[in-house]
Image (cartoon, rainbow, N blue to C red; front, side):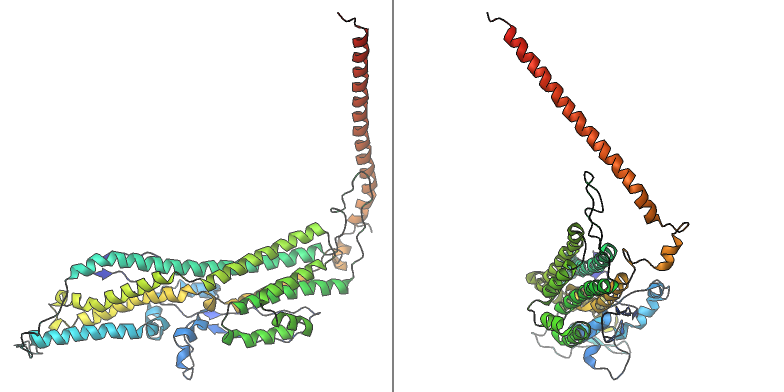
Length: 481
């Protein structure tokens, strides 16, 4: 995001967003989990279309929940439309950004009007017929006001750099938060995929024999137990991201919905333990660790699954860092003061350049236009600085829950469908049967090879001993001088 400044004019970054729908992914629940449908809310970009909606929802803090956009192909087509400029200009009166800065713009325009009126009163004015009139106030102390434009020209590059850094820093914070949630989505899928695929594998290092020793046989898999244990992994995965979303959201917005969803999906004991925890995401991660530990599989594979939990800790800590640490306050405050002072003084510098207009009145809309653009850039940075209330975290949680439920429902190791198993049979013999026939021969060959290597090492050692003994005998026979 780059800004270029030339003289007294500042290049503008327009802040208009085309309306786009926010689609939430439907939740699919595991049959083991007796749950009630959770509340779903369709969020749309921009203020609510209902005229009876409160004014607080049209701009400011109340409008942030309407900026949680999730794009699909249809929204991208509209985003790239050749009519986007017309649509954005058409939605300008309803823009929450411009409503938010209306007080600052009104104050700047008021100063511009005051400058025009005062200079007309003390310096004379021109009527509609083009006739010049003498000053109304002819006192010696009454002088026209103005400032040289060079002062604004010199300060423009510095102001531009401050605004560029301010907006870039805020956007980077939003981008980092979105990447953290992207990692959550990716690694929740990875965790549940490994749990479902590796369930029941308790053999010694993937059935690899060592020195001919028999390997541990895999225990028979109980489908009901498998469904329950994997369902718990999926459920606790969802509970973690949902608790993380609540942890990063305002209490008055999400606490009631959080309690409803947790109590509807978890058992009373699990829900009470999670809700009463001081740090709910940590408690949810602990419950997820316990659910993983109960899975019957080799500990090495459990360690691979648990690596995802360390990544969840990192994303949680990163989000907490963004939530608790804003852009240094002295920087943002100095930028706001610099910008406000520059714009409030701008009408004094614009009075002389618009001398060719009727009573300099064109400076009033020019001041309003520049104020909207520059105050708007600072407002964009402020809105982006705290990213979590404009990220569609509820949509992320629903998506994660649906994906995890689907993954653990797939047939895993030892749970193949009968149709698939029958399709793999050849003359009534499955590939597993063929492997069992070949395995003893392969084991005998491996054992014979190992024994051969051991015999060779023993022969080399015996030969070395014989040579050493011969050297000792010859040394004894040699007379000493």
